[in-house]
Length: 170
Image (cartoon, rainbow, N blue to C red; front, side, top):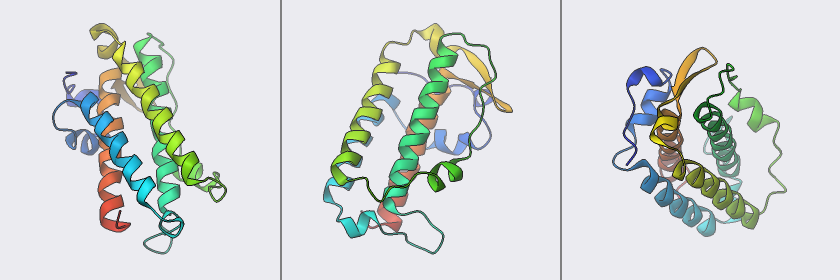
């Protein structure tokens, strides 16, 4: 099991996500993939296009946000684990959603995206050594370790799964 890193290896906003991870984060990643597959498989087109309030994202937009974030976080983990010392940039998650038209994305494409992105994250972490996991680098105005990012990925997904169940009735 990959142990939860010290708080100093997380941005302030990431501590909430890390707190949502209980037990083995790698097992949680697989469980979450199964949960996301169930949510999408059982959702109607109307549910995928549903936003629970004015100005909120649709379920499909939220799922694509989750995938975009995981891709970005995994890239950061790869860079940090390989000893890259460049300062990694932040990103505006709202802009990513606003600039990503999702109307054309089918349920089947969502399922492929979920499974491919999550599998890539799992295999990336499967081969990281303890030394690579413990490496720390600057991301925007904070520091992350590769291990901390694993907890952010899993916790961010937990956060959204809870929202999917509570706000989107999935």
